[in-house]
Length: 458
Image 1 (cartoon, rainbow, N blue to C red):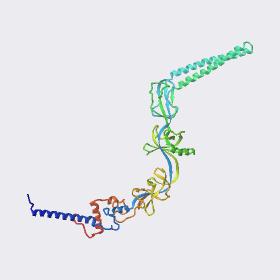
Image 2: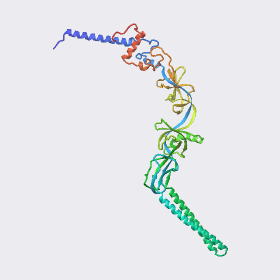
Image 3: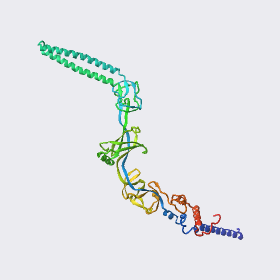
Image 4: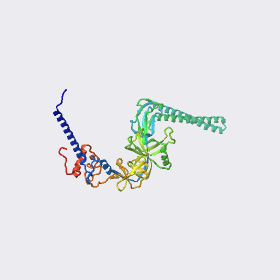
């Protein structure tokens, strides 16, 4: 068994009590420094301390900087959007009509050609020989016909002199008619041989752009070749095919029945760059029952050749354009009450106003009910607004508004939430940093204990 020294135990208790007293003193000093020394009310013109009891309430009472726009009458276009495919106005596969050796190609792949230009030449000797044979047979029969006609004239003269029988004259007349029929057959044979010979020169049936050739020079070609020699696509003008839901087709058909010409605008795949402008050309005669859509075709001049067959494009069909009261689409909000906007009153407060929204035309939305022309609505800064709250207008219809000069902390002309000294970011200090800032403001303003200064080292 061991016994502690009473004197040593007393010293330990004394140190414990001394430490406890010191801890209490530090806690009391901290309470005095961070809480008790806070002014009961902020000085006039100074911003409320965020670390105080009423910091958040003060922030809610600050006006919210917003950008507003004026409701006015604008032209609202009824535009239908779709995805379309560029198609050649005409497409022709150039094929040979006769068989033979392909002697020469007179085109370059991808070049533009005009109708009637020579594209290829097939060996013509076989067909030239057939034509010559038909011409020879025609001349032979022509000579026989001429001789038969002369004999007929002699027989008629002898019949008038009662030198021969009528039967002999009639037989000669039949022979002449037979040879006349032979002459017609010979002429048809000559024409056919000449036509076959002309087919050895292959020409462009339409104007357009050539594709890649399907056969090379020196090969044997025939009329039965399915691929042909080359393909010609007519790209000036060019067409675009697209579909619309049957619910939207009614407006389009109504405009067409009224004799209106509808404009069609094409954009690239990203729906950013405009490619071409044209007009609606035709509408299909029935709705596809499997998709419930109607096919339409538009025509474009394509002078700059920005449109290429089988290219995918974004189509905007402009059906109509009407005058209506409109606001920027960014101002229209959606909630449990439906569509609504924040309307700015003359006293710089906002009110929630329910509206009936109409057509949307890009950045504008038509308003059928709920607004009057000239009223201002908030387009930016709506996330911090509440009904009846105050606002600080930063810009009107895109034009910046000069801020009025303000006293207190912050630079002159600064707006709540906008300047470096008055914004929530600058005032949102937490922990000892925020408290120290509040204490500094308290000492400068002369609040509770304004004549005292913090001890050195705090």
